[in-house]
Image (cartoon, rainbow, N blue to C red):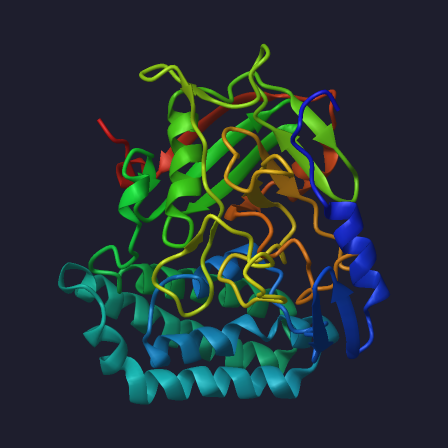
Length: 366
């Protein structure tokens, strides 16, 4: 490559394969730590499920309702009707005892609509219970998806005010105070990307701002590796990132990782730099098409416009043991267009990218 943006994907994934047993000691320069109890099979790989769980919501009843539907996918594939029936029964019981608790946490203006959605969910759960008796997987799949979409809408409307703290030192950078959806048209077809400003407000805000400027329109994919990444965002000319026309300076974007349970992201360092290994973070690389900020190897805070889609492979990077987590900043997920993402190569380019939902969440400093 002629420019300094590259990643440790191959190395990280090779190391992951070397440490596949439940317990191993891995020595790094000056450090030793033990890898234990690796989550190999239970990690969530559905991007929409990751986004639902990443919402800053602390309502136990809505989470129990969500859990009951999220985790029946394996049972559906295996045609295990007993666990599916139990999950539907659990969901019905949650609504019986917890409906008022759920509604109490919904913002006032949305409460009537939330009540209507919960009534629809109750009806859809009953349809699932009947479909289990008939062993009708198609109906169960469809109703499960609808229920989870409705749950996500309710959860989003439990957030009355933006709850995340952003350090004042980044006041000069765009930020996304919520979520936005980007439609990206490519020479192979369209991608739908959800940007998460709750967990990566600066990284997501930077990308959203550049999309609004038309920065990515016409840019090629400059790196495409079948098992690892698809990269874009290298502007025409000698620059490797975005030059702000107001300042004529390179816009540098910091490392930004939201650890589970925090209300402020970790900025300025990889989690490995801080001695945190196999971290629990809200936006992991578990899902195919996770979108992250590219950066020079030697500068964790030197990213700008270059981004990459992570082409997740369960054999090379087992869920729950992905050494990319905490090393690069994920700020969004590809929710539609996996087949398009698989087909894209360095011969392809972005035709256009635009925000189709959530543009009002983008705040750009004057």
